[in-house]
Image 1 (tube, rainbow, N blue to C red):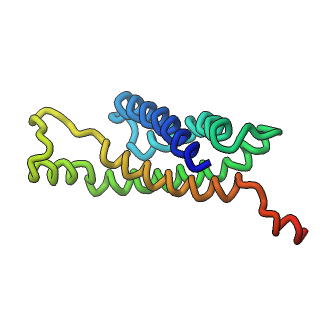
Image 2: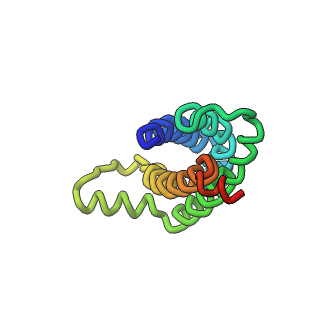
Length: 151
């Protein structure tokens, strides 16, 4: 399980970050980035659950109850991610990161270039990834033998 979690995480992250990038590029002028994040996160949840089930935990039988059991994890991760996305956008986190990197001569942007939301997205991905990992292990791990004996 220790190796399979990062593999599932890489696949899910690639799907999510690509979807978020495309949605942000398409809808940034119409909607706040936190709204875009929320919608993309909820749309990617079923795919992410299926990938994690296949790669990490094994396909659950029956599937739908397991998906519904994991739905609170997805909803809470979306809420956490939306909060941090909005907060980081409000404090202009990406602009500050770019300014620090430009000051340190590690990044050069032309005047007309935008840095996008890359730094915020990566930080939010780390926060929600840790959140989801802890909750997923708790919800999806088999009950311990000691717990079975107590019942």
